[in-house]
Amino acid sequence: MSLPSRVKLVDVGPRDGLQNEKQPVPAAIKIGLVHRLQEAGLKEIEVTSFVSPKWVPQMADAAEVLAGIERRPDVRYSVLTPNMKGFEGALASGVDEIVVFAAASEAFSQKNINCSIAESIERFAPVVEAARAKGIFVRGAMSCVVGCPYEGEVAPEQVGYLAKLMKGVGVQHIGVADTIGVGTPRKIQRAVEETLKHYELDEVSGHFHDTYGQALANTLATLEMGVWQYDTSVAGLGGCPYAKGATGNVATEDVAYMLRGMDIETGIDFDKLVDAGAYISDFLQRKPNSNAAKAVLNKRAG
Image 1 (cartoon, rainbow, N blue to C red):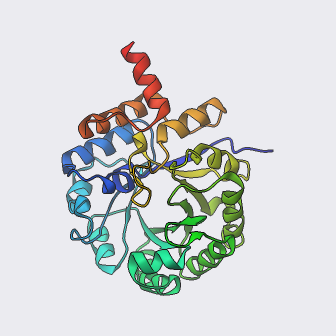
Image 2: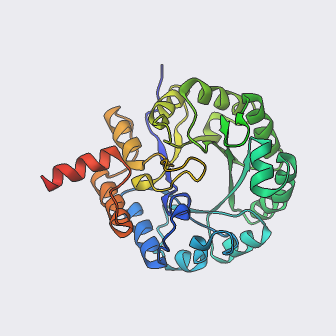
């Protein structure tokens, strides 16, 4: 079993995490979070999304947040852009990378964006083309890779089908996302196996939600396959809108703690990462949704 010696974590807390928060988070706080994450050594940060403020009011300040960040040359700043209008906003803000997404579940695609999987790919194909023409890297996210709130279990073949479509329109990197956190190690491995029929290992990342407490197990199961890139969210930000009261994204602190204990390099300063999580959790007036962070903070307080 050869595990990777180094793992890259993409912190999606500022975007995927905060977009689920009911209370408005001011641009200054979001900027402060991004600064603390880069201070902690994160080199990839998903900052915001250029979506209609009508649908996601929390992300209405996307341009303001990007304008306020003191950018570092060694950090890649990405944003979610579901359509051309979003891409134009991202382009004007000078982003390094865009993220497009589609579901591996037909029912989810219909309920979420009122079209089939194939139609959803057609919709964002011009976005991918425009981004690549401008030299902007395109990352894709495949949601609901093992389970869907509407149709239940999702077959691994569906994941392969979606990966093939995404590769076909020029998406350069693909994230295998267990959106509702129902995945278990073997199911996640099957989804990754299907993805690897269309993408190289270096072009694949894991995005696991911890709804049922399986995210670390799923991370380990894919590390054993050689996967070395993961999306995580500081302080475990981000509820799961489809599972009432459930946690969403796996906490960056928990994954970083596990990797450190396995002697896998991440380039992250763990204490500064805990500080970043504490900063946003204090603003939201709750404890971080990370066991490792809570343990460290309790120890500090003691």
